[in-house]
Amino acid sequence: MRGIGSVIGLLMVVVISLVTYKYFLASGPSADAGASTPVQTIDAVGAQNDLIAIAQAERMYQAQNGKYAPLDDLVTGGVMNFRKPSRRGYTYEVEASDTSFRATAQCTSDQTAGCHSYSIDPTMNVQIVP
Image 1 (cartoon, rainbow, N blue to C red):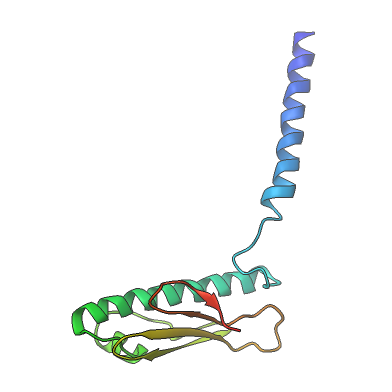
Image 2 (cartoon, one colour; image 1 turned 90 degrees about the vertical axis):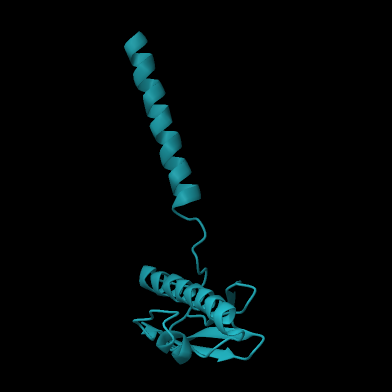
């Protein structure tokens, strides 16, 4: 009898684990709730990470030069090693002044549902561009 009780207990643990996975982990929120495919989600997260890297480079540049800089100046100034000036479906631009900046990852796939453009500023918060 003891062996049957152990098997039943083990089966209950497996069933509870599968139900938990299905309802909580597999259907959890993605980084970009509007992305409809895994590839779009990966590209959106990559674009957001690129924006964070640009913002960190802006902070370093500002600390060294007392002002923010356009993307080209960040790369040529050696503050940022940016090998990909664009990512699949996104292009980057930076508007900079002495006191602020705004970096944008512009979605170039207008036909693709769920493709959002993102921006970041000195607050280091990535936001969806309306």
